[in-house]
Length: 469
Image (cartoon, rainbow, N blue to C red; front, side, top):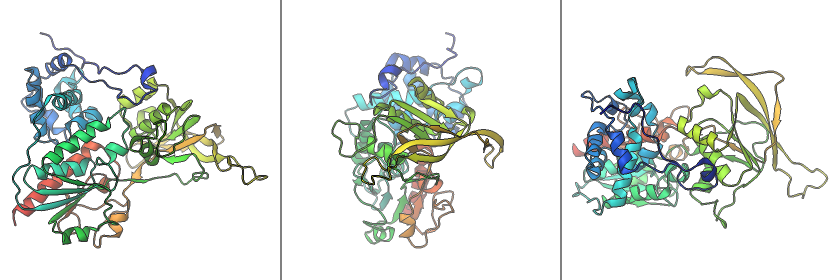
């Protein structure tokens, strides 16, 4: 039978329907489609796809199991190296990682590895009845700071080896950026909850509402009997442009906007937290977070949503799939534009006017691409005299985040770089003995799968250090 040159399309909600609900956009493969897609895999001897996976999932072997209809067997193979398969199948940028190495991609479209991983994980969650069993304790205790992808991965890998692991999460729900940062329509929170539940079945103790650096310090964790600490606290400190008007009512960081919607359910009829709904919205930035914020604003009832990005479509860092979905839903991309000021309503004759201080527009300037910068991207340069105003009611800044300085400021001897990231060795060890770190707390905002890879590396190093005692 001739190989299909194209990967099977992912079934999705129609754009005109999904733009007005928070249900998952991608509907997932059926069993029949999954088997057909798996049969496109060449099962290469040198397995290049595995080298593109930060957590080294045994991709050809799990796909071979799908070919024979052994979906649970496929899940067990993925589970050997990944603690979050249902998450990875949804949000990992496979197109630049495992699928970019796929041999089928040399002449045709690569195998839909991410879509198959999602199918297998969803099948397991829907059909498996046995819970993960906690292994016998090896007597060692490890504390994990943060329950995002790096922390959960580190916790899972250590728990499988018999470590008594405690995860300390600052928010009231475990999952880190997976629950506060990624919208329901891209990653349903029941999926994250299921992954966390599986770790609890392995014996991981997850404690919420504990702010390390305030409720407890790193030093106090050692005093409590933990022999090693992994810091996976993420990068939750939002960046701003420092332009006039950023303190106006109606200006959000993407972190705040998405947290209010995703974690605190501001889209409900009677939410526990307020959020700006309706009107005209401008989202500044071009990454995945900007796409999430723009598409969330649309679903919250915005009449019109702009993406304002200072480079062109070729430089846009968001995943192509997310950009295409945003365009299908009607998001208006204003490329090669950059904000210079946020404008606000002011009535000096009546300082008690409740509308005082609200956003009324955003002044922008057109850009052109000049010489490449240090990262190789062409530097955007303002075009003199090209300023214009966008009439908007809400502005969402999605231009990146930095690590929160709380842990650094309360932990003596913890070295950080100029961007606030914790300095680590190749195996995740910090400047403090028995303190490891990984994910966005080290690199700044990056991908879920790269954070998972860092958690995996640190878990291996912690195991080697403690098992040698």
